[in-house]
Length: 111
Image (tube, rainbow, N blue to C red; front, side, top):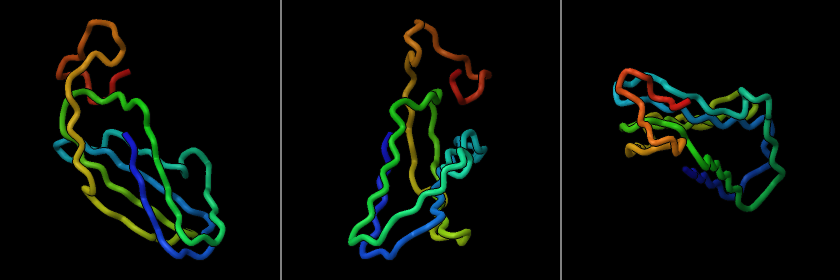
């Protein structure tokens, strides 16, 4: 999965936090991805164009529909907060190449 955000004609940005919340079809948060949780605050110098790419090569979710909420803040102030910004449909598959698929009662994250 890859998300890309663009901002044109930007001044310098410090203390940039980007977060993605992943909710299941019932609205239950199943994962929170954020540079703040890893202790990484981002800073960007003045630029004509800023492109932030978030790439997640393998996301171990079981089959279902998920909604992604995208959040960002700059210097502790909310810059953007888009609830249900993206709908993600995940097909069933053998994520670990084990020949086994999880049952419905085993949660949404494959581990």
